[in-house]
Amino acid sequence: MKSFGVVNELPKAALLSFGDRFTTSPQFAKLYREGMDLVERTAEYLDGQGRAESKTLTPPASFAYSSESIRLTTRLTQLASWLLVRRAIAAGEITAAEAHNHRHRVTLSPQSTTLPEGFDALPKTFRFLIAESQRLHDRIMRLERIFSDGAVAANEMASPIGPQIERIRLAFPAA
Image 1 (cartoon, rainbow, N blue to C red):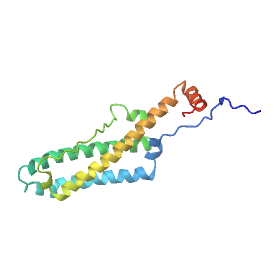
Image 2 (cartoon, rainbow, N blue to C red):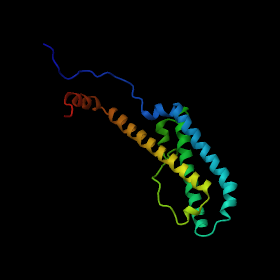
Image 3 (spheres, rainbow, N blue to C red):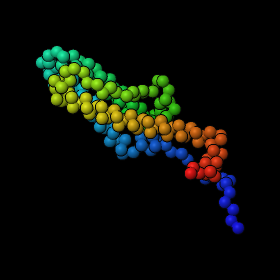
Image 4 (tube, rainbow, N blue to C red):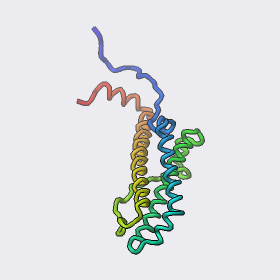
């Protein structure tokens, strides 16, 4: 008669996080190019056409332009920093642990969706750049949550009692 007991030895497999795989993938390379392209296009706009367009605005649109250009620049700086840190990890220039040190850490925070008074009067190109930066921010925030969840799972598996917890989970599956 065959016994269905607890498995004595679980296969040992190297854990590769989604973050490790993603940062070396063509998808990350595409995201990196998109992000850096957006930074460049925004800088060109703000230094050229945007500067000229902002001079024609009247209150409250001129105030909205000023505040939104600061928010846009800050958002893009954070996103570029995040992308550069991830690229450095993928290239082996720094480790993931080093990236979490305060010196390399990039903190992304949720963005406000409240639009200031006068937003609708802002130049169309400027509003498009804002929307594009918000979409990129949302994508990177989702990735960061996945990376963070993967790091928590990897830390749990690295626990000295991790294999025992896994055996219990396998022996008593949830109903």
